[in-house]
Length: 465
Ligand SMILES: NC(=O)c1ccc[n+]([C@@H]2O[C@H](COP(=O)([O-])OP(=O)(O)OC[C@H]3O[C@@H](n4cnc5c(N)ncnc54)[C@H](O)[C@@H]3O)[C@@H](O)[C@H]2O)c1
Image 1 (tube, helix red, strand yellow):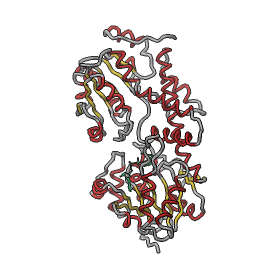
Image 2 (cartoon, helix red, strand yellow):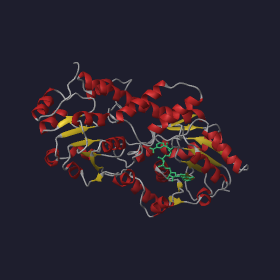
Image 3 (cartoon, protein in one colour):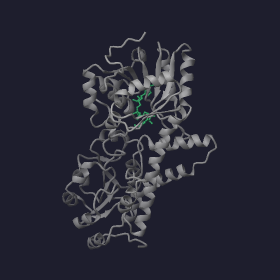
């Protein structure tokens, strides 16, 4: 018999298994809506930290929300499966699905936690898979539970997560859609109840079969990655023909069929999702003997783009040994400390390999970076990083980098070069200040060219106009 101390008809007792980016944000946002949440993790130090009111990741707005809901006794943390699963009406699996050696998604974390929790199921419960998993995983979860506990009364639902790190709380509180893959009415009723606080002013639930829900998440990430690789390919053409990728972006983004989002050229996509999800989708297709030339191209364009800044720097300086480079931004994108598959890592490795000295700074990812990077100098701020550098390289477009006093930066540098991997600055203004400036997908322009030549820089010229 389930017991619940919740007051309203829609409020539920929920267990979140895996308290990482997705689990912690999902659990906290459900608590904010009034549900009764236990977040479970096998990482004891993470749970100890959360119990003390500190959060293990950087996510704007999250810490305050965790504190508020913990104090209201709607959000608690545990490392004990039995305690956490007891009385749960829904159990969310928010576990890692990293690439295995073939590129396929490793579902071991999901399946082993399903086996573990199976022992403690008592009464009807909906098992909700939020991890990004290949089609067929819901069935595998079902089988794993039955193998451990043939009396368990449960259904498995797919509910892929679409939040973006950096605005995860907002995405979770106001989702543009909630995809539910479900094959039974009882579980669907529970999911409608659970999400009802989010649907007060607009229905956002999209109900579909389980396979479609599982595939929807991969298709979404593949589409977004495709847009990025497409723009990076266009940027490389822009550089050669004397065009400006930002003008091209505006020109195509205003077409409603295309839209403005996710059309920025840069240093390639990284992070914990796109790279592994593209590889996993390719692996699924390969197992089914389906060719995926488009996905292969998306990935190979991205790999090349991650090396783009290095080739620009190399062709500007020639030899890199004895040179010092200041890296601004390390996380794979702003507003997160996540450095998984970050383009900064590829660049830093290449520069170190070439014998350069590397100074780095990131507004929030320094702690994470210290665990990942070796052989670099960790600096206090932008100016400290730029001191005695031959070039500054902007890799992650943290907002604060737009407001740095660039005159001061130039003064403390040894050289004058500025490589802007995210097109945050205006080439003419940078050249006017005395920088040799290169962005992505922009020819430097006639005024900037004159200024840069006056400053004695070597400037690449367009091959056609
Ligand atoms: N991070 C994102 O932006 C994002 C967005 C959408 C979907 N996803 C998907 O969500 C899933 C989780 O991603 P994440 O970024 O939150 O991962 P994460 O690595 O940040 O968190 C996973 C957590 O699971 C815990 N864990 C591992 N094994 C466990 C077990 N047996 N029992 C209990 N806890 C266990 C880990 O200690 C960790 O805290 C992945 O499939 C990912 O692809 C991630």
